[in-house]
Structure formats: structure tokens, C-alpha cells
Image (cartoon, rainbow, N blue to C red; front, side, top):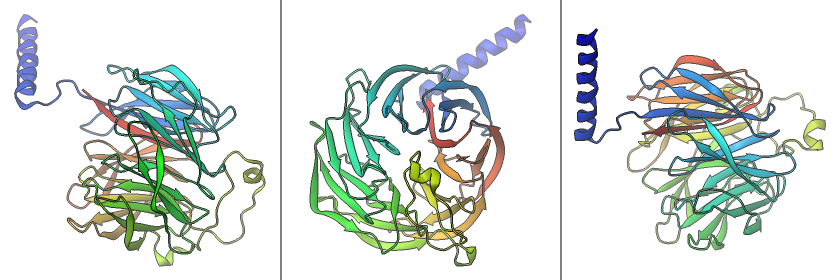
Length: 387
């Protein structure tokens, strides 16, 4: 026994010494969070980075129609927006050891917000309202809490579906699905003020319906997923002006899929959404897209057929090449790639399981490594590594 303890102590010391020399975290942990819209709570898991396996660490109450979430840049807080009245954003502290969430603050939001993001300084929270046709900027206190109402609310035109700053933190982009534009703003990181750029918007292709977006790691391109056609538009960013210029559009839904272009959906939770009746023709209904951290592969989801599309990204030009589609959880609303680019987690709004896939580093192909229980209406996925 003494010899075993001695050996373990020596091994632990050697591990710590190696980590100190290489700069690697000694006890890095990976936590996964999934918002369950219908249950009104958030599932939390630890991820085994060697296998991708998830272990539940419990549920945290939020509110009916809790959906979009974002982690603060310092990984200490999780912000979750609740889309049922009273509309609000909840700040949770993240326990670095266990991953457990503890509610620390709540603040009102001006409408039902399906998207939330944080600027690079961690001083401002951005939200977008699909049904309210607006965006908002809320202050984040020096302690990391969102406690006050929005300091700026801006009308956007029909169906603002996302809001995201570029990596320089100087420019902000807002896809408006119903208006079929991408709005362009200048961002003042000292005051939180958004000012329309010149031009204030760029048109999407007819019938596209821009929804979600991601920025390339080198900050040269913005990729916009269009909900109604499934096409992904690649825009080049003018480094000085922050304006966008479309350079390509690539289909994520194969021509032989049997789907026709979609139509704008009523806002989630609205009377119109409850009364809406689908016609006989299955329609494209794209949802989410994510880049791997190294920028080599891009993934997007389509909810009608429950598919994840894979694209390769050309070095230098950022050009997308469609590779294939993978079947996944029913009605995949959210996907997320872990910070190392090793695993992808997918949630399905009509599934009681999460799917975890290993990403082939050579070609981006997905191999399922496990499926894990999740709550009702699984929606948004966040993954963090904490040293």
C-alpha cells in the first residue's frame, strides 16, 4: 500500500511538473450545458476528453422557453435568455471544480430574444428579437452580472435572428430573416453604442432568410446560414470599414432532398405559432452552424430531415466545399464544437437524447461516440474548458 501511494504521489508530482513546463492545464475540465426550452431548465454535464462521454451533473431551473445561452469570455458565468414572460436574462456563476450553476442575477429584456452573445470586453450583452424585430444591448457589471435593463434598443426590420461582433470587437452583424438583410453596425466598446455602418445593410439572395452566423478565426469572413433555403453565404469583411461583401453561396441541403424553400416561422411561444399548420410540402428549415476552432471545417443543421451538413473550408480563401450530411437527433436546433475541435454535440428539440460525435481531424467526418439523456425541448448547447 505504501509503495502504491508513493508511486501515485510521484506520478502526480511528475504530471504537475510536466504541466508546469509545457504550460498545459493540470486539471482541465470540460463542461457541457444544454437549455431545455419546454422543461424550463438547463442540463449540465462533464465531458471525458479522451472519449467524449458525458456524465450528468444535474439540472438548474431557469424558466419556460429558456433557449439561447452564452458563456462569458473568462468562463466564470453563463447567461441564459428566457423567452416566456417576463422576458429576462439570468446570470449563473459556473463552479470551476464541479461545473454546477448558481443563479446570481436576473435582468429584464425588452422582448422574447432567441439569440444572445457577449462582446470581447465582457462589458456588454447583445440580444436579438425575432418576433419583436429589434436588438438590444445590456450592460454587464464589473462583477460579471447582468442586473440592469438594456441601455439601447434598436428596431431592425422583420425577424432579427442573431447578433454577433467580429473578432476585432469593432463591428456587429445582425441577420434579419424576414427582411432578408444582414445589418451592419459600428460598435463602441466603451459605451456599448451601436451605430449603423455605411451601408447599413447588405441584401441576402432572394428567399434566403438569413438566420445564424459565425466569424472565421482569422476575422476575414462571416458565414451566414439561411434558414429558408439552407444555403450558406460567405461574406468577406472589409478590415477597415467592417462592411461585408458576398463572395460565395453554397447549398447545405442536397438538390435531391425532396425539400422546397421554407417560409418565415411565427415567433416561438406565440399564438400564431400554436395555430400554424404545415402544408403538404416538406420545407427547408435550417437552424445552426459552427466552425471548428482551427477554421478547417464547418457544420450546419437542417431540422425537417434532421441532418448535420459538413463543409471543408479552404485555407486562405475561406471557400466552402460541401462534403456530406449526417443523420442526427430529431429537429436539431443546436450544435457546438468543443474548444479543442475534437467533439461535436448536437441537441434535438424533438429528441430526449444528445448526440456526441468525434471529429476526424483529417477530413471533418463525424463518428457517433454516444447518446445521453436530456430534457424536453433541448435547444442551445454551450461547451467550455476550465483549467
